[in-house]
Amino acid sequence: MWPDEGCSRRLKTIRFGSQRDNKQAQAMAINPTPRIVAEFKPKHEIKVDLDERSFLFPAGKSVSQLLFLSDGRTIFVEAVYPFNQSHTPPCLVALDLEDAREFGRRLIEAVHCARTQLVVTSGIRISINVVANGYRLQFGDMNNATELFLGTNCIWRVCQGLLRIGDLIAPVESN
Image: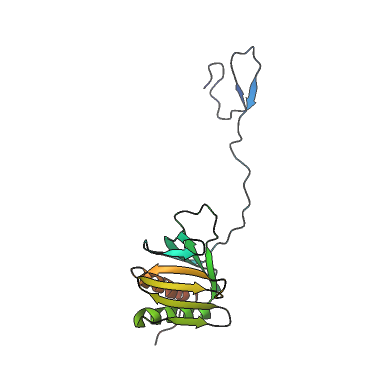
């Protein structure tokens, strides 16, 4: 509180120096104008922690988490990077429900059998390769693919996350 002013909740003008200087500055508004941001608000979200052996190429980024997001129809697989100075987009692939179920089945089959699998539907093309220290998932065309390397410690969490998001969207009735 300034010595020559009373205790007021709304400060409209701040006086500098002595009263002879007549310098005044306007205080910042207490209620800034709201920003309108159109963001995607997912209905369902599953977070999967990855290990230190998870990488995304061609971006050359370490990946610490995978997010499975859904608006009720489409499943988006997004990566969370511990650093992202080049502003690499987080979205890796968008799947519809049937493509996600097929991808989940082939991923589990690749892990159980330790064998390369290929997921080809009308909407996606994903190859799952078993490598020495984990798995390589290749999304898209072979000439312009996004590759996600996952360690063996986190692959089961990725499988469970993919199946859970599909179950949240369209639960399958049991016997």
